[in-house]
Image 1 (cartoon, rainbow, N blue to C red):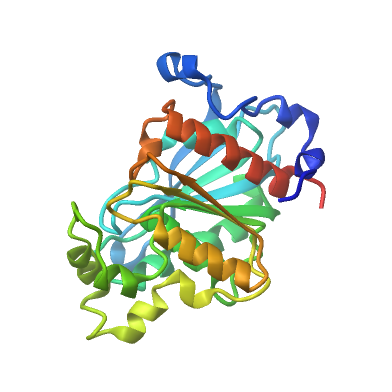
Image 2 (tube, rainbow, N blue to C red):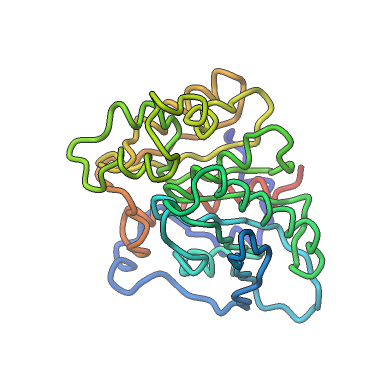
Length: 298
């Protein structure tokens, strides 16, 4: 990001960000909390009769219909479980720094197979664009983020042709190459990666090669993609960190701005422990990455 990236961030926002990557005392007392405004359960689409909802988290302000830089969040859960309420502590933390954070829903495998999930993410993005004024969204300053399966969907949404012009992508421990993931699963393999992928896609790569390629974010890497922050766990036995490295190398080789952060001792879902050392480190860099690209002067 360069040595002077912090210079573009407003001073009042800098004052809210973490002063250092790790504070030992906060492991025990927790990270500071600020009150935010929350709207839950807004229906944005009903494909096949399934109501898909989103939550909106925003700073407390006196002005009505104020627009904020926006972070869209896609939850994880092996594409088969989860809700926009997941990781709400993070959503509130980021919102308090002057963002609209919009956590979105999608249909779950195995009942609904790919591409239903990315279609639902696109529907959410279309809704956000169409209702930007009411949602407090500055559509010119928008990022997308996800964890695990959610990071996979966020990356697809940001990298595919015709995507809205995101300013940034944040990917926490997401699959990037589903073919490689199927043929070389982790060991140990606690969630049975191959079964998860069969449920998600409806078969194996030998049976559905084109679909596996279509569902792999690495297939969409090309020049002029939005800057990407890739955060992976060195001891992850669900999505190994090598998949972050593969995607990072491919992004860099095509001239894109990308940052790869590997936390060597961390495991999958490390940020579920919000004040833990691993999440403190990830949060320190994530908030700076978002601030420089969404709040910074461009």
